[in-house]
Amino acid sequence: MSASQAEPPIVEPSDDDVPVLSVEDVTVRFGGVQAVSSANITAYAGHITGLIGPNGAGKTTTFNVITGLEKPTEGRIVVEGRDVSRLSPYRRARLGMARTFQRLEVFGSLTTRENVLAAAEFRRAWSHDKSDPREVTDEILERVGLQSVAELRVESLPTGLARLVELGRALATRPRLLLLDEPGSGLDNTETEALGDLLLDLAQEGMAILLVEHDVDLVMRICDRIHVLDFGKVIAVGTTAEVQADPVVQAAYLGADVEGAA
Ligand SMILES: Nc1ncnc2c1ncn2[C@@H]1O[C@H](COP(=O)(O)OP(=O)(O)OP(=O)(O)O)[C@@H](O)[C@H]1O
Ligand SMILES: [Mg+2]
Image (cartoon, rainbow, N blue to C red):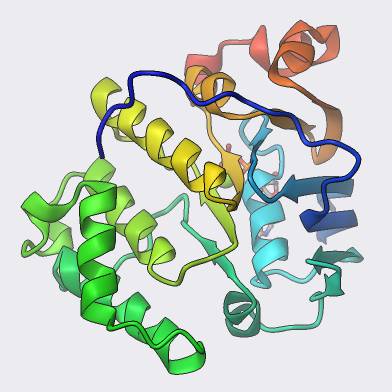
């Protein structure tokens, strides 16, 4: 990853933009706990959408519903106009959805290269794109800045780098919708800045990105729209400026001890 000198302009989605992802009135109950309550969330091609909120607000549960790991009690998930609510996680991946996990899910005993290659081969098995997975892997390793650790086993890497391996693996499936659950955790300032640059580049190329992140500086820098979750409810949606100025959000999250929340 190379640090870019000038920030690309941030353009807000307009009414003409078609959402790649619509979370429609999703509710998730775990016994007595209402983890997500009638949430509506949209993510647009070419934009990074932030999903923020305190611990336990329902962010990861929302990702699990979007990707099909968790069934919503109510509501549906629409991707590029198609209701995918009944599809398996695998089918959703084939439709162009990829994610990273808050609790890292990488193949620790494999090298960085092997992790990315596995995903590139997975894609080639079902895609019309028959690019050589080894070439795709080289391209991704360079893009994510992982060449120097390409031949190392992932279990030997610091968490921040292992998270980037997981990001590389997600990118190797060439997703149109990318869901990132706290990708910045474990990264130092330079790495975080490079991650932000990479995500901005990916969005500029047309990807829809939904970003869960406690690093508020990163969120405010790269997102153009933000949804704020609190106790499972979307309490605010707007531009970074609107959300930052919202007294309800201040009280629920931004004004609170954000470091402590992370
Ligand atoms: N499998 C489960 N069974 C029961 N309760 C759950 C389950 N998964 C999550 N919860 C509860 O649902 C709520 C939302 O959790 P979730 O992990 O989605 O929050 P989050 O916003 O991702 O939090 P964090 O910022 O800490 O990652 C919490 O109260 C959590 O304890
Ligand atoms: Mg979470």
